[in-house]
Each structure stands twice: as structure tokens, then as C-alpha cells.
Image (cartoon, rainbow, N blue to C red):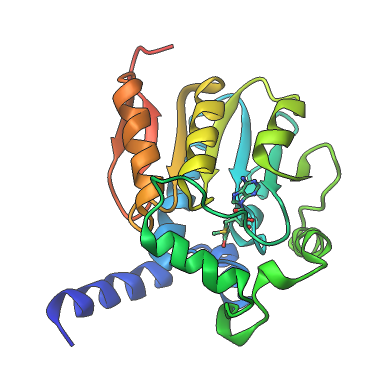
Length: 241
Ligand SMILES: C[S@@+](CC[C@H](N)C(=O)[O-])C[C@H]1O[C@@H](n2cnc3c(N)ncnc32)[C@H](O)[C@@H]1O
């Protein structure tokens, strides 16, 4: 066991301890793929946006079993809606040449029916009732999908996003793994992000296609800055927009 592994175990344990009760619940209910460290950053960034009264909705691209969606939906208000977007079936294939071998291998395992779910559960992408399952989890956690404050939007982001009536975004969680969807989501969010809004990127350190999409976005949009970390956070520099 090497030192950096031990260090990351300690950090993960400390993060797990400091999570909110809701975040602890979604972990123990096996509803999220996010590590404790990522969940803590997600929660803290969201709390900051809410405290700062940043105007706009909360959006998640990549819901899967609904764990992070539960946390985000809990921060809605009469003025702030939650939108969770996903195909609610098997993840679409990474088709860009910018996606790395790890992404393509991961997809091959999933498509072959060989992926394991969290803690030995059925892998979420093989469930035929995923949309209903996520709706039930949101309801159970006190944030039912009512089409007013809480929305679940089924389909490819590229098809569903243009149909939504979202004028401003306070907070976005982009958790969709591959180059093309991450690139699409960054562009979509950037058109509507409020000043002091935040965009949390999940897979920057996991898949090279995601990293490439983010790096290209930052290169083309110097008004954005990045707070590094396990799940980096993008925000508009002061005075922009
Ligand atoms: C890693 S999972 C999300 C994990 C979740 N946020 C959690 O808390 O565990 C990624 C999700 O993104 C979805 N996804 C990826 N590309 C998509 C696209 N182009 N349109 C719609 N959904 C997509 C997949 O189907 C999958 O459910």
C-alpha cells in the first residue's frame, strides 16, 4: 500500500464524515457514483450559490440513479427550479476520436452487459424502469417530480435541451463522461450562466475526452476560470457578463 493511496483514503474518510445527512443517505442507499470528496465539493459549491442568491435554475446533465439529483433538487425554491436531464437508459457511446481508450473500453463493458452496479446491484443502464426509479427516489426524499419545481427530462441532451424554457442558470452539474456531451453541455450552460453562478464538472480526472472538452472550452472562453479539485468548478471571472 503506497503513501498517496493511504493519503487519499484518509481524505475520503474525512470527507464522508463531514457530508450532510442527505449526502450520507444517498451514499448508503447506493444512489450515486460520486465519491464523498466530490459530493462535499458539490454541496459546498451549491450552498455558496444559494447563499449568494445567484439567480437562475439548477441543472444536472447526467442523473443515472438520481443520487446527486436528490441533493440538487433539495435546493429548489419557488424562484429556483431543478432540471435533471438523462436518457434514463444505457449511456450513449463515446464516438469522438477525442475520447480515450479507457472510455471506449468502459463503454464496451457496459454494452456487453458486463457492468456491475453499485455494491452488487444491477447496473443502472440495464434497468428498464430507470426513469420511474429516479422519480421514486426524488419523491421519497421530499422532492417529487412535479413539473414545476422539479423536472426530469428524458432523452439525449442534444434533443431535449432546446425544448426547455430555461432563461438563466445559477448552478450546473455536468456529469456525462465523454467528450461530445460534455462539450455540448458546457456550450449550452455558458449561454445562460448567471454572474457568480457555478458549473461543477465530474469527470475531468477520469476520462480524457471530458478533460479535453473542458480545456478547449476554457481556451475559447477566457472569461471563465477554473477552481481545480477532484471535480473542478468553472465560474465567470468578476465583471464578465
Ligand atoms: C456517470 S452517470 C451520472 C451519475 C450521477 N450524477 C450520480 O450521482 O451518480 C452519467 C449519465 O449521463 C447520461 N448521459 C451521457 N451522455 C448523455 C447524452 N448525450 N444525453 C443524455 N444523457 C446522457 C448517461 O446515460 C448516464 O446516466
